Image 1: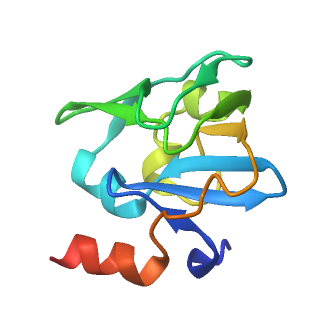
Image 2 (image 1 turned 90 degrees about the vertical axis):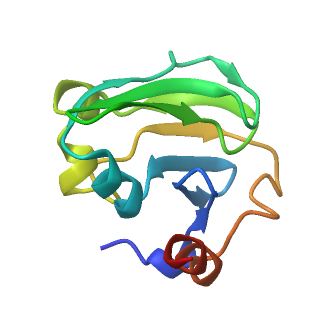
Length: 125
């Protein structure tokens, strides 16, 4: 199980796990619950250069279509093909098998993002 306190978060309801200069990005359980049953996920191609704040994908549910925003700048080094094949993983395993992309980013890319306590305060407010 992922230690939720070790992750960084955005106010767009994404989580980021850092492993050296590789960042794994997904959407939070809060976002997955608000979306409802996820039925389609579109992710950027490996090698795509992304800019923090830009739209890099789409998540479609039975309730709505949401955009996936890049929380950091970098290069997409891996996408989660399992989520493309089975979008329900976003709902059932948002912090494990439901991750979306891995990005190679500069050191300090997650500086300034929310910690768990700040994210929980945001979603409870």
